[in-house]
Every structure is written in structure tokens, then in C-alpha cells.
Length: 359
Length: 212
Image 1 (cartoon, rainbow over the protein chains, first blue to last red):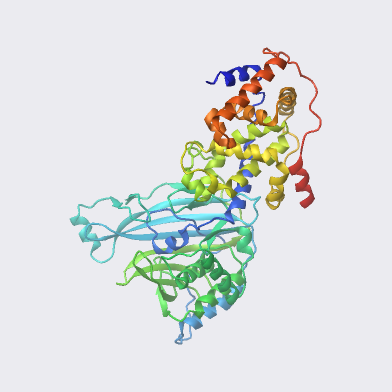
Image 2: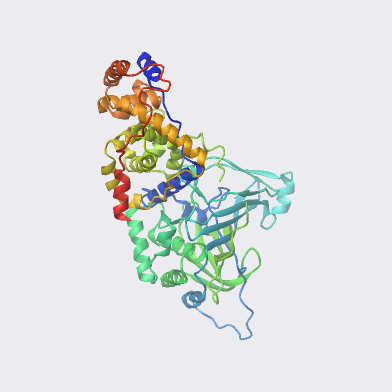
């Protein structure tokens, strides 16, 4: 049946084995990925997942260089009671003083996730460091590490002994993450991913640098740099995305909170956009203020809570931030019972002219 | 960046049809070279071939929902798109002119002299083969490229071109009859060796220049 093909191949053999040069392969692929990112049909739900359930799925990276994020300076004047709105507006004003210049946007993040074991909870922790270049010509870089896991919460230690002091736990799969995940008490090696890992809804993943999820869609670094710098404009811009990409599992308001928190915490935007995001949060009327909250690293800041309704039972997001600098210290997810479900702690986040580590 | 282990992974048709960026990432890794070789052989022009690679994958993205949900490797579909792109490079380039404008700048010559010599040698042999193929009708030539030089079987070529298998078979048969008459089966150095073909197309490039 294929004699014709065989004869033709003898008559006129393929004359050239012309592979793409490796650098051309890489450049052409990056070009293609950039072109298609803007028109991704249904955005991966990574963003919501990230705060809502940090479950052992390595989601994405986070944060940065220059100055480690610290708590509030101790003040000599007695603190006067303020409203959440006032504190968020103070942060909106103060964050404008931060720099938006630099070659890299660097986020260093610790993600914590709490899961149930036999009669007690376990807290797993993961470190992620991500260097996103402003220019497509610069090299992205990132590293991820499992920091270990341990019994968590009152009485958990004793219950863990009763359980036989296991050092490996299994988180069963669910609808969102069908695969069961194994978590070890011991820390894991640092994994250099070089480029940002993006996790997709059906479990696939890719390494695409300089792409970020906002409004449920994958956005390029260029889009991030051109966002509206006023609260109303930003809100309208995001709402337009939500309308274009409806998600019945989450309300517009909850999506707005989620996106605003990412904008102030770990997205490569200007100080003006972060300020607008703080203002957007200040305009939401349902939030509580805790003036002296402490994050999982013991750093102190103002905390504002937002009631949300996530499919996995998270009912409250608590953002702890430094109102004097606009830095976000940590974003915590709590259940209706007030239990910690997970957190994303910003070790640092911001722009820098430093170069990423070699390798 | 080393991407060991990902190279051989193929995206599913569902993932491609759903517009998963990760699926196109894998698709590119798996088949960019195959499409590039195909394009070089069709056009004899390395610069145009890179444009065809880019345009083929952008067209694949645009037309992803036309990929049939059932079937094996997506390669025949991809080579079919490459064939269409080559047939009308200018139209595809117009459709994606913004994207092409952002294409990474090409090196006009290879980095190393020996690579350049290799390429000239390749180009010479290719030009010779293409003069022979110039005797075929376009439809026969397209089937020839797909089946003989890119290794698709009749059914895959039929899927690529959207024609019945019988049509593929008869086109190849005619191509064989014609080439038997004009090609020395033991071409050393070959009946058409020598000059590079002069008037090579660069429609995509010239359109791209206009928008730069």
C-alpha cells in the first residue's frame, strides 16, 4: 500500500534535516505563548485557589528583595481607635511612596496549608521565590521548597502521639485536586524552576514567565504595567473581566477582594495601582479591624477581615499589613469556626535592580 | 532551561480544543522541529520557514476548535495547517501581522562558518529537489511533502489536507509517475545540482517589515 511512498523516497530522499536552533526554538515558543496568553478562553482558577486552598498543590510563586517586610514600628503615642476604612486608606496613601522601578519584581512567600489528620490538624509549609523580569530579554528565575509539616493547633501534639507519631501524611484528592498528595514532616530540597510554574485547572502545568493571573485571566507583564491607577477605573476594568468570564462558584465581590489582595501583595504593578487596590478594598463596607494582629512569623500589623464564601468552607480572609508602608505581611484564610485554613505570608515583595541568583 | 521529561509529552486533543496554554506549550515542544523541517523543505528558505512555524502555531491556536475530538497524534492536523499557511503565507501573515511584528529578530546567518557551509550545501540540494518537484501540480507536491518527506501515511495526509484517502493515493501515484521520468534514482551528484533557486518567496517577511 505504501510502495508509492517508498519508491518516491528512493527517487527523491528528504534533502534536509533542518532543526530549529535551540535558542530560536525557545524564542519562537515564548513568542507564541505571549500571543496566546491574552486570549486564553477560560482563565485558570489559580488565583482563587491560591488564597482559598493552598493545599499541597504548588501554585505559584511569590516574592522579594531589598528590604524584608517588617511589622509596624512601635509608636509612643497611644493608638487611637480607627475604622478598617481609615487604616486601608492610610495604607493607600503611604504605599504611593514605595518604588515601582527596578529590573525584577521579586516575591518571597511562605505558604501554609492546614489539613486534617486522624484526630488533629497538620500544618504544611512551602517557600517560593520568584524573580520576574520587567523586560522579556532578562532571565526569569524561581525556587520552591517544601519546608516541612507538623501537628498544628491545641492538643494536636498529643493526638499525633496517639496516632503513632507519623512523619508522612496523605491529603486525599477532591474535586479541584483529584490526586492525593503526600506531605512529609521533613523539609524537601529546593527545586529551581527557573521560570514560573503555572498550574492549570485540569492538572496540566507549564512554565511561562512574565504571566500573571488577574480577573481570572492570564495577563502579560505589559498588561499588568498598564492597569488603571484609580479605584473606580480598576474596579470597572476587573468587573469587565468577570462579566466576560463568569464563574458561578464565586461572587463578583469575592473575586474583587481576591484580585485586590493580589494586587497589593504579590503582583508586579506600580505603587499607584497598589494604592488604587487598597482604596477599592476600603470601599467595601463589610470588614473588621484588629489593630495589633500577629502573623505566623510573629510580625505585627493591622489586620482587616473580609467575609467571603468559598466553595471549600473558607468564610473569612484576614489581611495583615503595615499601614505605614503599605506592605502586606500575610493573608490568612479562616473557617466559620475561626480556624486557620491556610496563609500566604509575604517574606518580601517588590521591585529590585539586583540580579537573580545564578543557576 | 532544561525541560527534561516534557519533550515527549503530548497534549490531548481535548486540552488543545479547550485552549489550555499548557497544551500548546507541549505541542510546540513536541512538533516545532517537525513543522520547521516541513517548512524548510516546502519553501527552501530558512527565514520564511521560521515565519511558517510561528504562523502555523498561531493558526492552530485560532482554529483549535476545528481539531476533531477523536483521533491520534495532532501532528497531521498541524502539518495540514502548515500546508495551508505555506499555500497562502501572505494571508496568514496579514491575519497575524501584529503577532509577526513581535517575532524575535532573526539571525540572518548562522553563528558558525561550518554551519553556514552546511546550510548552503543543504540549500543547494534542496533547490535541486525542488526543481524536480516543480514539475508536479501543487496538490501532488503537497501530498509528496506530507507523505514522503514528513512521513505521514495516507490516512494522516488525508486528515491533514481534509481530502479522502483515495485522493491522497491517486495524487501520490501521479507524483511517482512524473518523478520516475525526470529523476535519476541514484542522484550523485544529482541532476539538478548547482545554483540556488533565485526567486524565493518572503511574503511574510515583507508584510512584517511594513508594520515595523
